[in-house]
Image 1 (cartoon, rainbow, N blue to C red):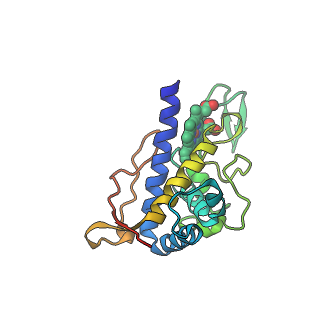
Image 2: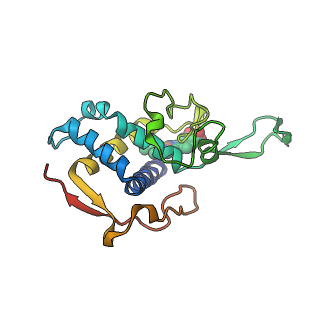
Length: 205
Ligand code: HEM
């Protein structure tokens, strides 16, 4: 049980951080805006507190957009409790159904230009991953919704805020962000196929 919960928490959270860094390297203006927010709120203070994180609205928007763009658990399994008809298909009780959270997060019926990585869409928006917004379900929905949401949220915010505050980032050998490979590896949790390699420079400001 402990092994299962540890696996569910570490693999997913590290995948989100790797995808967030990937998109920030692909979108330097987003990275700059995020660094300005984080550094502006901290004023050189090294230890980041929960109060500091509460103020970082753009940080939260970047993480939400990463979870929409690259949900680490794209398919959420369910078993049909009774016979049902969905979009003209007969689904017999007991059938395993896979809810495609990735397709829902990229559906143009719910999202403007879903193929654009744009954290701004989550600013001044009430859409959250608490299971109340059916168009956005990176942590699942209903009684089996991920019980680790609160932990994952703080963990990812804290790590990403530290990475933005303490380092400047670029790709090795002058590589351009827009050429960065974003292929995902197929599996239960989708993470990058090839590891992300980036150069960190200590920020002294
Ligand atoms: C960004 C990080 C994470 C994502 C995207 C994520 C996503 C998910 C998803 C989609 C499910 C299935 C929900 C459903 O069936 O409706 C799930 C279940 C679960 N998650 Fe997470 N998770 C994350 C982090 C964590 C953490 C940090 C923990 C524990 C500390 C955790 C523990 C679990 C457990 C135990 C379940 C199974 C719950 C059940 O079946 O009743 N997860 N997670």
